[in-house]
Image (tube, rainbow, N blue to C red; front, side, top):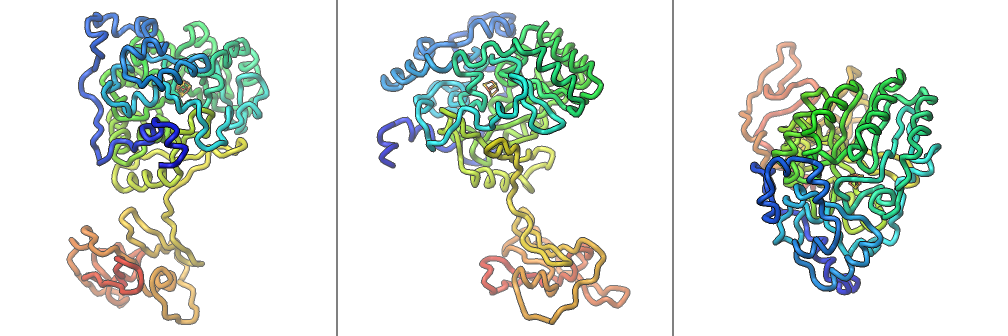
Length: 481
Ligand code: SF4
């Protein structure tokens, strides 16, 4: 433990890794309720107004429901004057009260770590949205897109929120919606804007009249093709989407997409699935953003389980965001290597439609930068050398150009693939390759022998198994060449 950790016993707790093992975090199959609300009639429980009115909004309420040390309570009391807190009974019921590292708890219950600066360089506005803001509340960074912050309010305040300065911070952007007409007028005058993100805070906390104003104003603009409503309501208060009037409004604006934000498989409850199905039935496509959060979802098994659950609900995993360096949220940040390790555990292991794009939002307003494990190993004029998810390394000849005729060179490994004397390098013990029976056929056109199991197009010439240990310093890679 570092000296700084010893100062704060919570650090060890907060950075404990997310649940280990694969596929061990499954979405709940039954609705859950904390015993405090067991006698609430279903009609009330399913009413979003009741959920909102009964949300937990103070440390005084929290201390009766979860255990805290005296030091934690003192720190939380101090934080309460700075940051808002709200957890609807529905979302609170997903917390395991016996587990201080519960992933739902970490996202929603304040932590004394919010008063600390994990790296020393967290920022209030890490994406520099306000520097690209020609009108208060509107960010115009990419020429064809605009972001509108329509409210500072949310149904649940996520402790890592990138826009914490506007949402969690008390008095943040309380008057922001006073600028709604200026935001709409700006979009009307900038015909290059094709895609508008109606965000916040959470726009589904707006009064219906205000939400209608935004959606109908944008819908009437011919140059706007897409309206994306960014909301965490399907996750934190799905009961809001049981309201047919709201579903009709979202469905009636044909340009509307919903961008939601599931972070953990336990959030994909029967209630959340019902809410998503209502949107889908109304013709509203749903894309999901997940934020990579230390202790919440920073392991391959949790992410696979989350993305599979979303696919079952017909919600498309769209982005996996690296957690931004936000003031008071540094303890949620992982390394970028952790994100790459997770992406490595997805591609090839689950359906491609369930794999989001992993992005880092770069500093100084540089925008979203996608990052991938490296599948391109090397290249020459004629060929590229690629690797697949199993570690099999192949030569891929992408066009009809003949291979360059250079000086014959004795070489091996990846260089051998570039020179054309091998087709692939295959990890020793690769089960799929071992299943193949060696079967050599003779090309009818006199082109020599080839492996009948290969497609022969891109990876020629592959000579059959048994796999040979290359003995060429490539560890457990055997050469097939
Ligand atoms: S719902 Fe969205 S805007 Fe609101 S606190 Fe969570 S991440 Fe921030």
